Length: 240
Image 1 (spheres, rainbow, N blue to C red):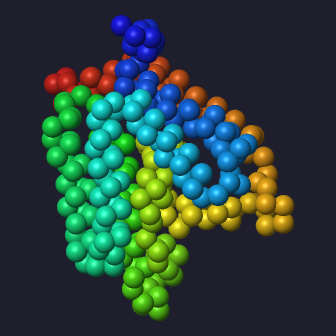
Image 2: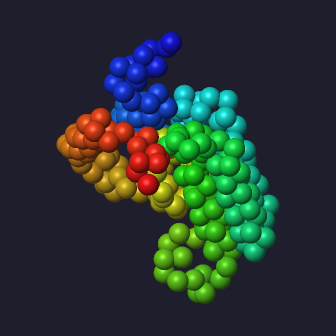
């Protein structure tokens, strides 16, 4: 039995949940590294960092089943670059990404609350469908779009590296939140920095600590509640 398995058993915490929690918490040091060394580097370096780190997070959580997400990244790139702005691209996006996810649910899920490769793949499915639809809007006449569509439409489809970085960005690849490619590009291009100093507008330390403590508080309450009402009870005959 490995260290993670022993720790999760001692805490009455599922090992897959422990891996997911560690990966989410890893966002803090990973963000600190990015902010200290990489935020002002060129796009290729930033995209490479996001991609390599994201693949590592997926391997830690999903093992060899990471290939599902890699296939999705490749499909997103192909659809956006070879069928941009077509109705077929939108149809294929739903068939390929949503179909892949639903088939995964059929084969990977059980009657328990499972954390498998389908957990982060659900986030990626929504992100890739949204990406294809934003590229679709980007190929339409801009005067025919609503203001919200103009804000998210993608005129220039992403490269394979950019698609991977957007899909695997460590702060949102496992459990969200969702964001558009245009917002991701603004972030990478430094549009959220101070326009004069090209430095972050303010320290994020206080905000990060407050949100971290809020998350810890919720996790403690949740685990305490699971002692009184185990998750298995919600799927039992007694509950129904």
